[in-house]
Length: 352
Image 1 (cartoon, rainbow, N blue to C red):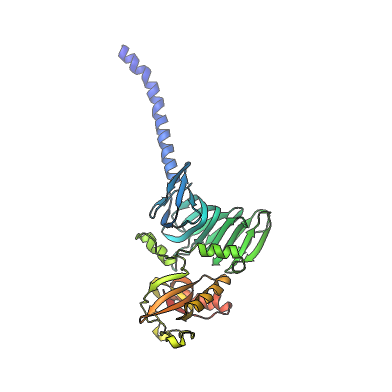
Image 2 (cartoon, rainbow, N blue to C red):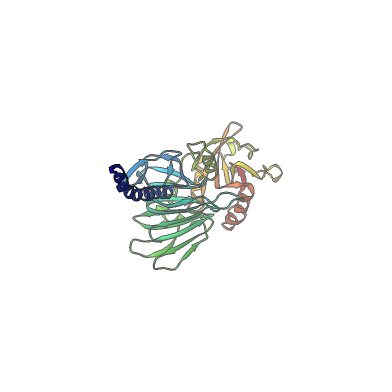
């Protein structure tokens, strides 16, 4: 009887403990699901860490970034992230980016807030695929970046969003909603609460932010399929490494006539419509680096994603002023016929 009484007296406690244990386990599973993320680190330069649960965790290539994390960079740090295996998110200049939610799907989605520093988001994923749908808050500026590329800063000059490609929608507290559809156009909320428009090429802080958001070498430090996709959509560097084009390049420029632009390749010898390395629009090709860099800087001042690329043709070094990086030749041609043509800029399409 004593044993029976003991077991009988314990059974209510055991009955109560079982649902409590199940509840605790379910909460643990829910919290784990909440922390799951589709965001991954592609590469880092300098000090980059993730702050989660009041603890700082160093971030390295291939590391996941969890929902709820705050990615924090040192003053000279830089990081490239990728959402659901597509697009590119680049952080720079002491950035602090809060990750609210990331999820796979059609489209893949992400919600972020830039607390400080610089972020550059490219939600384009190439033809035939659904773009990323990214919501980015830069302070009180709330934007939707869908199939577009944008640059955001949160610093002493205010909260700023600039369009680099496509179009973005912006909501501002206390002001009318805005839509940026001209590359290089920006919207800034100053510390005193004023909202004004500006041009990227005319604003020195934003030009510096754009330059800081680019890696000297766009190739990620990983070899995963996710990293391979990023290499195609990563920003074009100011000076790219020497590469040998797979198709016939423009004729080499003799040293005696280095000031004369190289001729564009004829349509009859153009490369196939798609290429894994990507495509660009060449505006100028010379053996003189300084002249090409000046041209690229002038294009950057106009708010265009320009870069100077170095190539080798039959043992001779040439420099190209290029605009944009595209997944197909058709996309590059369309860009040249619309955006560049409207700006009075001529160029030809070439593989990267």
